[in-house]
Amino acid sequence: MATYAIVRDGGKQYRVTVGETFELDRVGVESGKKLTLHEVLLVGEGDSVKVGKPLVQGATVEVESLGEVKGDKLFPFFYRPKKNSSRRKKGHRQHYTRVKVTAVKG
Image (cartoon, rainbow, N blue to C red; front, side):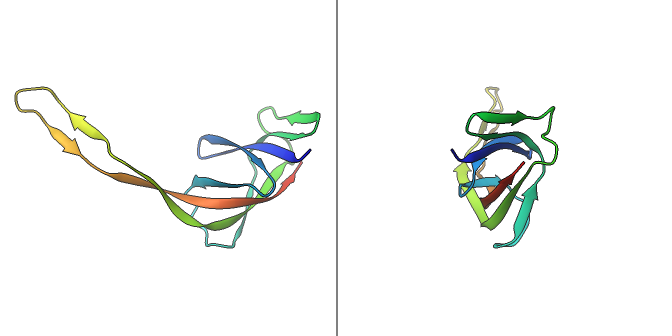
């Protein structure tokens, strides 16, 4: 079985394994740079699982930045049903940093 971990970053939790790519909130590092995620909530390998209270001591997840990407375009629409109604449509694209997991330690 492959080693997996649950990490927390930016108020979100991600289940990751070695070799997997996923998107974090914009970190601001260049493509090809290494990052270490220290907020590891759980580490599992096969039948053995280490659960943190709230974090697993000494556990880290090493990732490599693959560059910045933009998310899907969202269109929030505001409408107020009054005599002088206000209608407003705006677009928004969130910025993310795509990373690849290189190692799970712990």
